[in-house]
Image 1: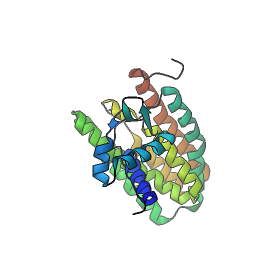
Image 2: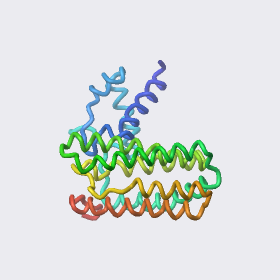
Image 3: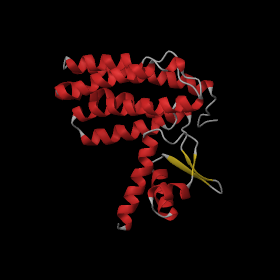
Image 4: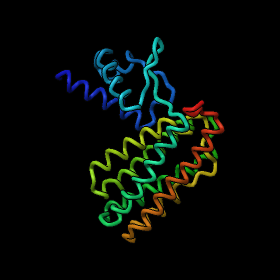
Length: 232
């Protein structure tokens, strides 16, 4: 492969590991290990990591290495502000355009998410927590990705995907536990109900409430775990 093609593939490989929650916030990344996994040189991995750093997803620390980015509480709040502006708009657009097949995908996603939530009370080990966290991330991607597809705006899709991934880097699940009273599936279902009615305003409101609810939960967890703000 040409070097540019190899670089693109290397970037995409690491980006997907981040988006799937396979790399934990604060985790140190090994250039050599990633190079072996992908089948490229460590130098090419370093180049890809440099691009990911520009995207704000990893950070290179002098004389230490490259780590998965951990956002400050203030940065996380700023990202939530953007999501609260953009994602409700996307849901409203989707309400006017969504197809029966897309609604079916969303209904199935709600059912799977609910099944995952029922497992939370039985989980005890950190390994199990992280495994379930990754499964929840996958389901979130299916749910929100389907709505973005229904909205029919590729630029909007790319922007929200980036915001969601940046937010995920500072996700509270990586801090060792899952909220026992988690009830995201019901919030998802309310959004789907609005989409089934093709009601843009109801879809907008339901999506905004969903994002704001998640923001409050994560804000509390960030405070509990003493995540620093930019001003500190």
